[in-house]
Image 1 (tube, rainbow, N blue to C red):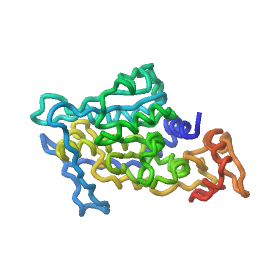
Image 2 (tube, one colour; image 1 turned 90 degrees about the horizontal axis):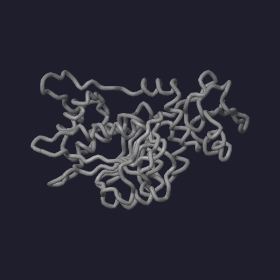
Image 3 (tube, helix red, strand yellow; image 1 turned 90 degrees about the vertical axis):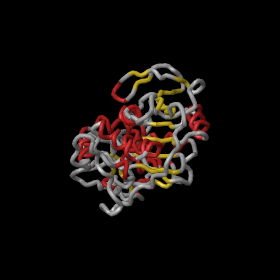
Image 4 (cartoon, rainbow, N blue to C red; image 1 turned 60 degrees about the horizontal axis):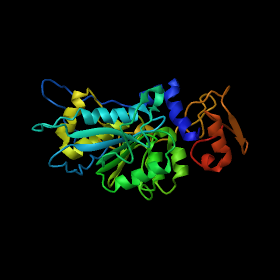
Length: 323
């Protein structure tokens, strides 16, 4: 099991970290909703953040938009089921068919186990999957070369290929993000920056768009990026109605810079030590540790300690400090 897999697993299993994540996410109330009244989008003069450019996508004249959810062992539930819920809930007035056609795809149709142990049987393989116009890549296991090649090939004709959370590592391994900007789960910022120095990592971004590529932050950020995709295809009103019907009150899909709670690197202290590799809380009584240049560094797992010990300068030269 590699360090990044440990990051994904720990964020689900570490209640303290999860509570901190939930506390950091600010849910903005849509406003007084009654009857068919919907919340108005914030204007460019509201707050300190610029409004996102609409950058519309053209839906097909006939038929549904095929959306492929790429999954493998360990796929994180909210990373792909959040966007799935968004796309399945879209209703466009005047259409008799559903605007999106959703399906799962994997290297084989053998059952996979997602985070938490749910078993899912992928609907298609790379060989027989319909050509997607949207690809959703959640956090999951290390990708095979066949997986990376399918992403590369399919992305030549997609409107959007989007990653959620540490799914950005999978997308980055294709080489498609080289020289571009991207974001990922806040607990993976250091690992991502070290592994992909050619990619401009944007901390504090809810999502980042680069042509037909898009990367979302962690967990619920994928819901916002999916709503953003809906807006690009069918307009803001349809996206707002979708969010309203879902009883989803987050407005991050209207503002990619709304993840500022995660823009600053957490500081490790003697009272509350953090893993120098992923930034998660560490129990110093039980967690692995290393001493480097007279400073003690703590880790969430032996895998993170191994990663640090292999190249400590990559981690101590960040703005995290040892104890």
